[in-house]
Length: 120
Image (cartoon, rainbow, N blue to C red; front, side):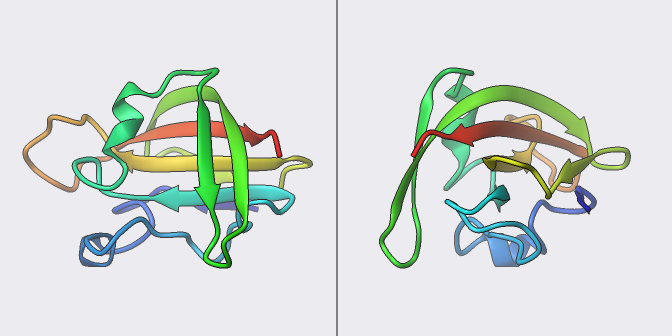
C-alpha cells in the first residue's frame, strides 16, 4: 500500500505545529518498511533543505532506541499525483515537508521528500 501526499504532510497544520508527525500507517523507525516523518519546512524539519544524498540521519524512538539512516534520494513530489510506498523489503525512512522552502503561503501541492535507508 501507499500513503497519499494530499494536504499538509502528516496531517493538519496545527498538529504539525507541535513537532514532526509519524502517520500511524507507516512503519516505525527501525522496523522493516517505510517510516514516514512529516514536519513544517520552517521549524523542526527545516534541516532537510541542506541535506544531500549520502549524508546520515539519526533518529531516536520514543523508547530511546537510536537508528542511523543514510539519505539515498531527494525529490520534489506533487501531492496531487504522488504517494509514498509503505511496504518495502528494507528499513527505510521518508522525511516529508512542504516545498518550496521560501514560500510565504501555506497549502501548496509540492512536497520535499528525503528518502533514506537504515544502516543500523
